Image (cartoon, rainbow, N blue to C red; front, side, top):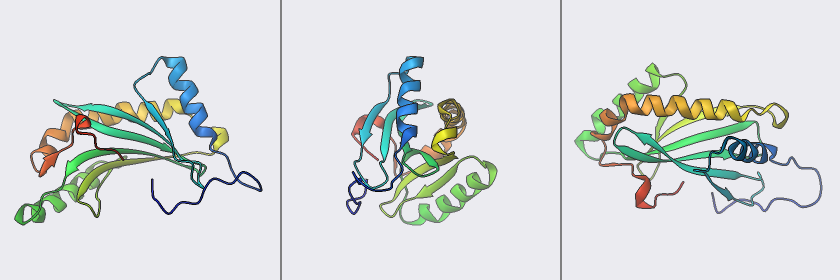
Length: 166
């Protein structure tokens, strides 16, 4: 999380992140014990659930990011973007993938890390952990279909065992 966040208020009017507790309860109920919870203790009451997703022969770092907004983000680290001449073809390649797959968006961060993002919207009262799980299942299928093509274009493919953290 960013270093410029404001501590979560203990008094006054604020919205608590109820989605995190609902997601954690769902994970326990379903016996899904491969997520690690990280509380950010920021003004958005952000809670991140870290895991690794299979993508062909790779395992990629994935985070389900909940907070007190209406957004739940799912972010997968794909690796490091190419530099030099390969970058000129890589960006249009990602744009093509973005145009073909409405649910996911491929982005390149300012640090050259490449991510696949999905945004799920809901209020605390209507948050459905099953929707997040279904979305993760779609991502596993999608990455199984296309990650090898993405990985061969990267300077360095993503690897959940190398200690990368979102």
